[in-house]
Length: 317
Image (cartoon, rainbow, N blue to C red):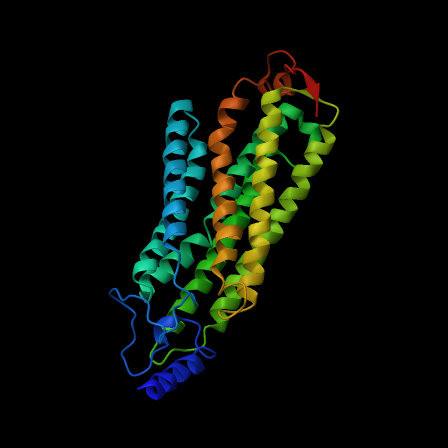
């Protein structure tokens, strides 16, 4: 009996080098792509591990609370652009709920594909919120602090995010189609496409970060309020976290479905889940719409045709 088990285990292990999706790593049993089956060491999972129940619960709760708070804050302040953070939190929530589902039904392909497709695009909504924040800071700092108009930031970088989402969605669809074909086909083209989408997103974030830094540098002699300082700090914090996460996901997927990063859940929890939770929750604590609502644009007489120069308070940038 022990020899038979060893043989089956060896056969299952030999298959893991050829197929990236675990639902197709099986011995003499049918593929476990639907329904709910608990973890069996003879079958490699799509994750190469059994997802953590604790992490699934924690992040599902965190993103749920953040989403509810963002919805409440957007309607309370009547600044509905804040809903972009709620949509991002909802996307993360779906992804982590799917991972929690996978923790119980680890071979279910629907749960696996649901979490990978949602968690890979969710940060795009957080970056969109950062674009809006910068577009509202520029009039306060002065139009001369930015090489682009506020509206151009939204048009250019939201378009880049949309392109990134489409590329990643196409890649995910190709990989999913390949993995679900009978027999399973090569998923490398789909994976490479997903990596291309993340790299494009990372590049656009890097350009935005450089422009954001340039605006802050040009506004260094402005005297601004404590509220603006909080918004700038929160936005900088979120951008840094999103960029770190993008670098991690790029390396992770570039290593392939059996790479060191992707088969060790602790990296995903720390460098994706935790970072994205912090990036969205920071805007619950530091509500940009509320803090910027009392600020006057430095170019108000020019932009609005009336009014007095901007009110600036306390200290310098």
